[in-house]
Image 1 (cartoon, rainbow, N blue to C red):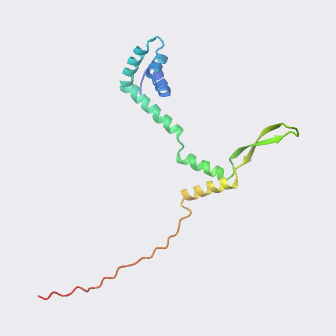
Image 2: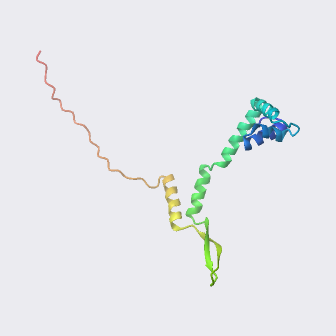
Image 3: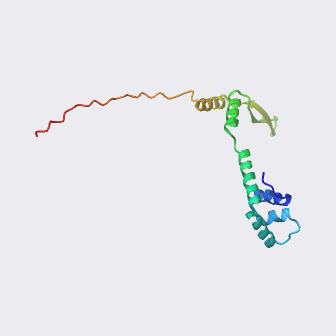
Length: 150
């Protein structure tokens, strides 16, 4: 990680959350009251190499945390296929009069969901390939060029 001061880090973290320079600066430096002064000082901070590098590194970390990687996707599909994932189902239960209540029930993934997960895993591992019949035609060369009459 890049070396920055605690106040610079607070400013950068707040700026990542809000995107607002003056609000982020006033949050990190509470003694600054004017928006114009906060905006000018915050803009200067954003031009400093260490603050910019810190922001770039944090954004890259946040991006990695928010996007599922290949292993995570394969683990999820496998757990769905094996029926380890349960879905929540809402059931409306009538009480015999004009009222009713809703109950939550967990149920195992449907067979169609499990089949789809298996199909996606199979495609990933190239388990099923479409066989195309290809006819190989080799060209035949015939020498029918007339001789020169020289």
